[in-house]
Image 1 (cartoon, rainbow, N blue to C red):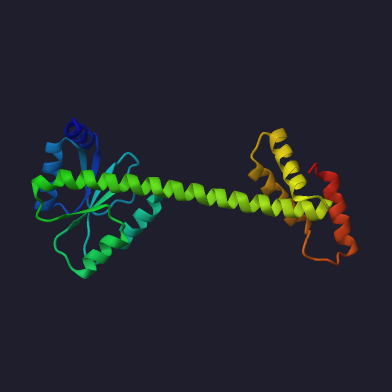
Image 2: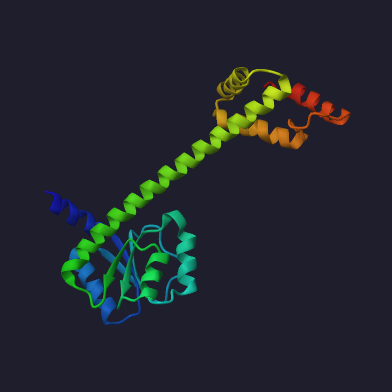
Length: 222
């Protein structure tokens, strides 16, 4: 059943509670223990978060401590699901929640019947965000690869006086021969072009430029 799957997933979570040692923190730890989570409490904010932590409960006030901001920045894309713990709602607290990109918010004093729901929804938001970030990263890499190949083709076309199709054919042939991607070959061509100082937009090339281009032809199989 779906309900048993959700409960099993929640019980497998490793939680960290970053909150002053008071009745609110103890109440949260008790609720998490009843759910079945492995939980540790930390205060003041730690210098690092173990990579095995799945969900981080963090007290959020009007002003977020700089060391906590730094910690979350350093974790980067390995940041666990973040659940903010707030005592009251006002514009400053809500802004802090947004600045920290919290996946969910739990208000204090805690209500036992709402904690599991908040955890499940937070994990769902976190997973969707991670998936979106991966898609965006992949698209950026594809765009960069396409741009590099276009630039490398342009260099070969002007250097060897060949067509665009022929330039791409040479890039692809080299990629197959070296067992790397066409993007890798394109980047190598661009780097070599930069080192040699070849400027394909300069119509009046001086003698030393011509010499460098000839040397490039002799050293390159493109």
